Amino acid sequence: MPLSALLNALLIATVGMVAESPAAPPELRPIRLQEEQFTGGVHILVIGASPSELRAQYRLEVTSGPNGNRSIQTGSAVIRPGSEVLLINLRMAGSGSGWSARLTVTPESGAPYEDRLDGSATEQ
Image (cartoon, rainbow, N blue to C red; front, top):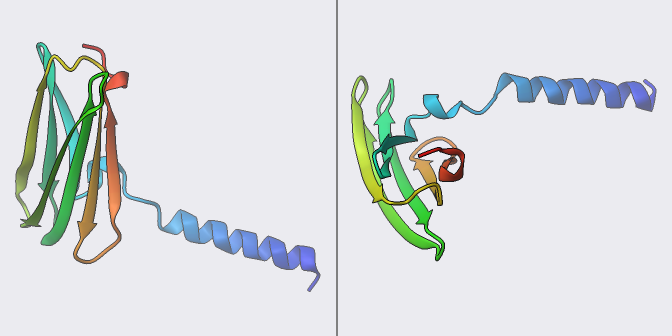
């Protein structure tokens, strides 16, 4: 088999593997970030929901303001099937659009993942 044909076959096989195992979209992840606006601020929510039992560690880091004020909250969760739970409700008043949030989730089984929100994309 010529080298070019071998490389082409390898490329097709690699692309096929990537297409078969895409990362879950943020709205389908069992522990995810969500933002809710209110007059004068924002709630940063960490919500858990899974079709099967899930045990995981999570870490939320929120940065806001011109001086880079930072809040870090960590925890562990056992998510039961068929229920949605609120793990964190962080309220930021007067934050405007100068904030960002990063959630890191490490499931007991499975690959760790991150979820991010950026307040600069949000109009108040």
